[in-house]
Length: 598
Image (tube, rainbow, N blue to C red; front, top):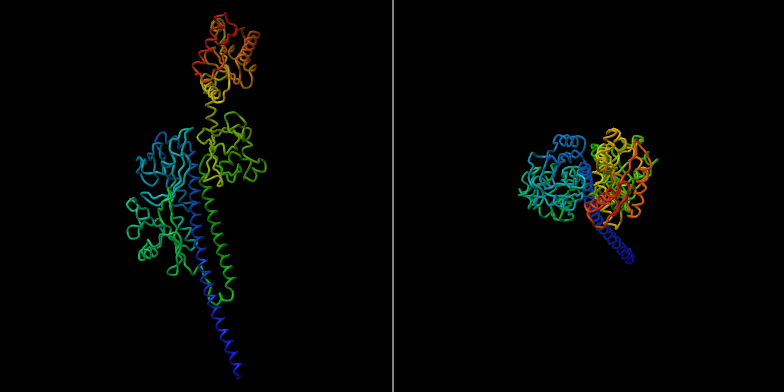
């Protein structure tokens, strides 16, 4: 062989060897780089899974708390300070049998933060002031609330909803869930979790729910925690795993995520193990030739499987959430921007013409289109706001709505609360109070004349005074009675007297404007409330009424005497009534059958 040929052959061999070494070294570094990127992405995925499961659980138990807070029977039980334990025991048994939530707890407290009922113990009646800042927070801010905290029993996820009777805050209901079901969901993704509570809560955990500890100081909050993993953390000094991130050890990707409480303090760490073999399945030979396609394929498969698992679990949570709201006798809706996304079974019992929301929306673009326009009741738009925004802004008011269903007008009390924020949507609860409203209307109506009675007059006059002072409005008041009505009763009998009262009040009611209100405040004494009316106009109306009565005969001929006055801004109700009474007295003193102003 020539020297030149040998030399070139040697150079080519060296080049091939060097190039091959560089190539394999590149592949090795690239593989390590891709594995590190994969571990980083996988740790982010695990963190998202955990946050997603916690958010789903918070949303579910908050929905339950909001629905139960509207229960009329619970409000009555709080007022009587006697909770129906059997009702909640049965409800919780149903959850254990039909859902993945095996350990839901319920607590009811009164306005003074005294516990009235705890589902997990017979111990109640104690004061929680100074002990439960999260409960104190809801009484201060009066909003629905979710938090994570450590108590005497466990690391818990809690949802709290205030309970109102009319506008008065009378207590709160708290739904408590645990991390064990979240641990089970993660295990389905081949992740072995341990929820490790910080050692500073050791003395606080008087009755640890799982009774599991590492080194006697670190409480483990999930029942199914692997004893092998607990021993591993103990032997490797557990505090080495209290961080926000991941490490690879002993063939596992170990992801640690802090679990924070209401004040953002770290309560515990979720330490999660996933076998590296489940993450990086590439073998060296296949990696050298097709590492990119395999890497992409693995990522796609993981994404598809993760999405499928989340879809199945979210579907299960929706079933759970549906079962909760179907257990109440109220209509419960979940709505976004006035569009109903979910309605419980009670909705379809009232709106029985429809078997689904799709059928409902073929006829109605919004449930608010069924609201009857009437003063004092919720309509589609209120004070420039949509009905849901108005309800949430004015949540402390006793809001009511009238809806026509199958030719019957029903009255509902209506409440709305955001699940977490506006983007999440709102829970709307409608409670049928039709029978109650009828009783209220009866209590405010004079039985004989069917006009408003003194009770309704007192409410109406205070409402007009409030409007006048707030908006600088005017209104006037007419007081009248029948001249010598006692003689009518004495001469013709009380039966004729009653017909006289009925006939003339009906006659006067037809003459009044739509916005005017007529009240019977005594035997033959009446008040007429005239909104947005000056004294001179009120005097003209009073004179028309006097002439109307004088020129008509119903059973017997009568006349009336009338007093008229106009409200003076910021005066008291007593002052106003004294002036109108004085004006009526002047009419009688001047010979009756006349109008006097004061």
